[in-house]
Figure 1 (cartoon, helix red, strand yellow):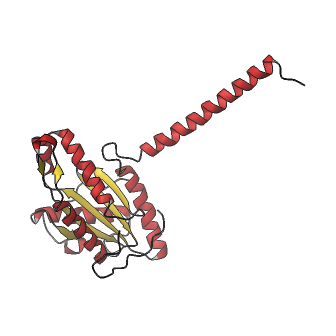
Figure 2: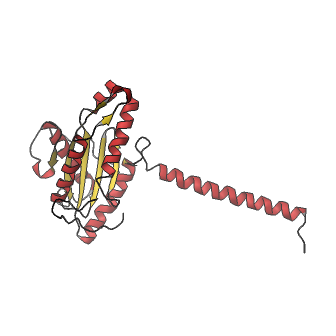
Figure 3: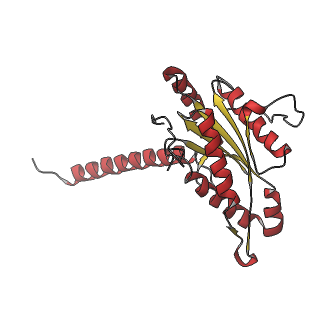
Length: 231
């Protein structure tokens, strides 16, 4: 038989409902994706980092591979906001995110932990290699000229703490806490430096902050002369 006007209207209604359902599903997907992305920098946020850390620690334990964590904090970033304003401050965080993203692999996880603090999960990366990567990042940021529009430019530095699973923590909280304490030790020793969790001792400056709350397989990092195996 032939379609009459009622059939056409019914088909149109069904199509409209299907399109609405697809649109809702797409909006949900994007909303879920945005929930894990930092609004200012476009990198992952703390929520994503904490969930990923649990997964990567389990994977490292299962395969016997090391997992290292970098805690990075901009030194005296408050002065940037005070002198140049928050718009320049936000631009600075975006520029820093780009520099950090260029210094790690796609399988690693870069996240803004909050404020001017960033965290990197380095999969299949032993402690000595993680320290070299941290030093390369520190040097790269120290040598970068940040733009402040009409007000010229300025330089910044990073304090970085490095910890590795399982030696500094076999679960998320102690591992991130060790990296956090190492970062604070770097601050207390004069800033603009890398500190290993191996160096942590009975130092009153190493007070931890609140403990954190809650990808693909990678080849182990192998160093070549003059390189740490990273792009």
